[in-house]
Each structure stands twice: as structure tokens, then as C-alpha cells.
Length: 252
Image (tube, rainbow, N blue to C red; front, top):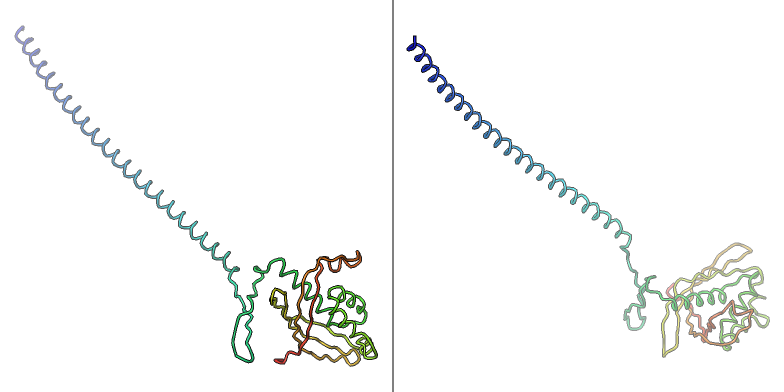
């Protein structure tokens, strides 16, 4: 009986050792499988992260290119109105045939002095050459105020005698002055101007209109002289026409 019991114990010990070896082997296999699974997960996570970063950089680059394209289009749209054509006023000498450029008609290059000169010259020519019976006294006073003594004396002669301008035209004629161009120059330190005009002479009786083209040449300066208060608002800077000549525009 004792032998049987010993044999049973020996068998149980052998089985126990076999069970321990089998369990340890399975446990080791599980550990190996778990490590491989973890490595697979780490690789997939890294790959997904790289793809996400690549997409993010691609989106940022596409957004930058879109903004740059939009700015380029806006720049072209803003610059388009600035494209201008600069006309030139060209003068041809009738005798020699020489051609020279008098001025560039660019409003941005007109300084304050030039703008004032052209303003007074335009006002003077329109008042002197124009004729509106109802405004005759006003224009007459304006011309005298803007003229030197010699030029004023010549202008007064137009309204003297039997052939005075107002007696001939009366209220039957109107003359509207269209100033076509004003070119400012300087000769021997004296400011001069050449003005091209169209005198539209309208007969109020039959409503007919005759156009006469004239070229006016004058010299001028600004004089620091005392004015009556009533005249100061007409000529505040002392503009004075020194010489005045009118010729027919033979090219018309």
C-alpha cells in the first residue's frame, strides 16, 4: 500500500512539472504576441501621424498660394486705373519746319503758381473778348482791373466814338469765348502766354452763329500795389497784363 502511495505522489509531481512547463511556454508565447501587436500599433500610429502632418503642410501651402493669387489680382485691379496716356502739345515752325514739344498736359505737374496764372489769364481773355450786353459793365471793370495802364488805355478805345463796340453790337450780338489752350512761357525774364480761342459770335436776330478762331499773345506779372477794397476781391494778387495782341488763327 505504501508503495502505491509513493508511486501516486511521484506521478503527481511529474504531472505538476509538465503543467508548469506547459503554462510557462504558453505565457511566453503570449508575451511575444503582445510585443508584436504593440509594435504594429506603434508603426500604424507613426504612419498616421506622418500622413496627417503631410496633409496639414499641403493645406497650408494651398492656402498660401490662394491668398497670393488673390493679392495679385487685387494689385492688378488697383493699378489698372493708373494707366494713362500723356498727350503732347507739339509746335511746328512754319518757316523752318522744326518740331518741338511745348508742354506735357499732365495735371499732376501743374503747380499752384501755374494754376493761378491760367486762372487769371482765362478770366481776362473771356472778359475782354466776350460780349454779353447785360454783363458788359462787370466785364469792363474786370479787364481794367487786370490790365496795366497802357493795355487799359487800348481797351478803353474800343468803347469810344461812334464805332464803339457797345453801340455797334448793342443787344443784338453775343460773343462767347471758348479757351482752347493756354501755353505759359517766359521771354527775357518776362512771363508770357499764348492762348488759342474760338469766338462764337451769335446774332440774336436770326440765331446764326459764326466761329472765329484767334491766337492771343500776352505778357503779365504780379504787382504789389494798393487796391481799393471794392477791387481787392476781384484781383487779390495784383495780376496785371503788360502787353496784349490778338491774331487770326490762319490754320483754321
